[in-house]
Image (cartoon, rainbow, N blue to C red; front, side, top):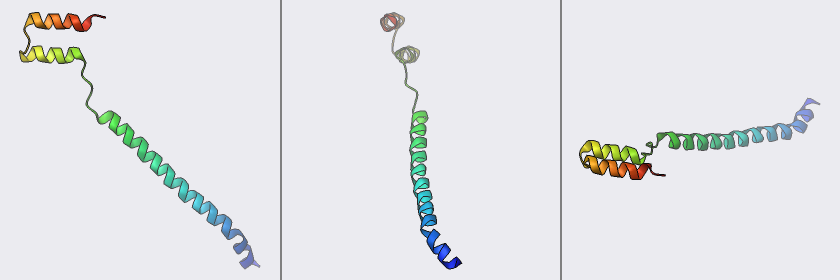
Length: 78
């Protein structure tokens, strides 16, 4: 009697097992995709603003004070 009982329920447990495997597979892919995008977002170099580049050029001596002030006023105009 028990032999038939387990044979009747075996397909149900098989479907539950396969559903679990498929769920773990897709959730792992989703987790990988999320962590990949998150690392790309935070591993990138911060974007420099125009005023930062201007300050660097002035600090290197590429610009004199007059050029620096002219460009700075152009950048900050809105």
